[in-house]
Image: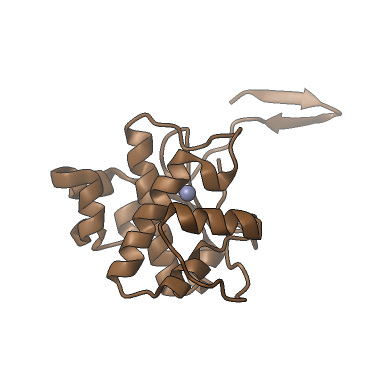
Length: 179
Ligand SMILES: [Zn+2]
């Protein structure tokens, strides 16, 4: 481990990351048709090899590492958010996992979050699944209302996803993290 000495202290600069198998915490996703659309016949195999890292922080929700494609999930979000939100967020992140596996970029620093091709694809995909499980346009609009986008961006994201509905006054409920 490279140790850096400075200011009279030593700091180990390489910290371990604890990764767990995705399927230890999330089971049955290999049977979800839309997830099978992502990975085809290899779905079960992909999910078995998928890794997940949990972090404990009051803020933050989910993300996909653009370094090695593992998922990052807030323990607080996992434990406390509505189960439907957690489910859709996992579907969303699995879409990013697919993008990562195809060598496509997950982040587009020069674009607004809502205009990033990776996000548009993942949100469209998630909205499709939301409709399949019976969510109304309004519920989906709420789902798209993430904390760090403006009302105009929210409308744009909805439009990208083919959604037209009145926005509710619900508070934005989550945001994604990047790593
Ligand atoms: Zn995303």
